[in-house]
Structures are given as structure tokens and as C-alpha cells.
Image (cartoon, rainbow, N blue to C red):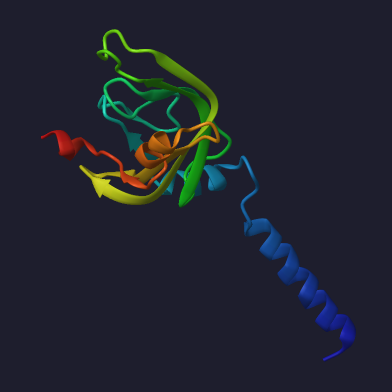
Amino acid sequence: MSSRSALRRSLVALTFAAAVVPVAGSPATAAAAAVTPPIHLYDLSRHDSVKPRTFAVTQHDGLSALYWAHWGAKTQTGTGTMRINDCTPSCAEGHIRVLSGAHLQVRGTRVDQGRRYYRQYRITHPAFTPQERRMYSQWTNAYVPSDFG
């Protein structure tokens, strides 16, 4: 076989391979993306969302204005504002501490009622007190709809 014939075959193979590779934004790429179901996050207020803007941690504490640069990987981090009620003397009369730049990290997945959910979460912020760090910065099991019956 001549080198010219081998070169021609290589060019034909390369042209064919390029023709079957999906291009970003093409129907083939959209179909591939549609195959992977989204990962949801469920919080204490029973809010089911993909890339949530809010996340209730307790009845009185939570995050708002969450921004997610990406979504769907094994571990994700969103940044938002954490509001913590010290519940002193009671939760109705407590002081609200506002911490902007808090990070909500989620990881792992599990399936519940046919949907994928992030399995664990934790919240970090450099201004957390030692008690807040123990309360929020440990990996905690995230909720799924079945947790509420």
C-alpha cells in the first residue's frame, strides 16, 4: 500500500469521526444531557429543587440567595447568606445573625421516589462560633421526600 493511499484512508477516517462527534448545542448533545437525570436537594421545609436559591437547615436557620456555579457533580458548593437565630430568650424573640459568603456543600447521591438527591450537606463560614461550627460544618444526611412519610 502506498503512503498516499494510507494518508487518504486516514483523512477519510478522521472526517467520518469528526462528523459523528456531537457539537455543543447540537440535538445529539441535548439528547445525551437529557439521559442523565438532574440531582435534587431537599430541605427541612420540604423544598425540592435543582440548584436551590434557599435551603432551610432548621425551623429558624437557613441560607438564602444561593449561587451555584455548577450543578450535578459528586460534590458541589453554593455560596449565599446564612441566617442564624440564637433563640434567646425564645426563637420568636431571638437575635438573627446574618453571615454573607456562607458555603453550602453537598455530596453523594441517593435515589428516592425515582429521583436522585444529594445525600449529605454541610455549611461553612469563617465567622462561625465553635458551637456553630460543630452544628453546621459536619457532614449531615440531607432529607428526601420519604423522610416525611
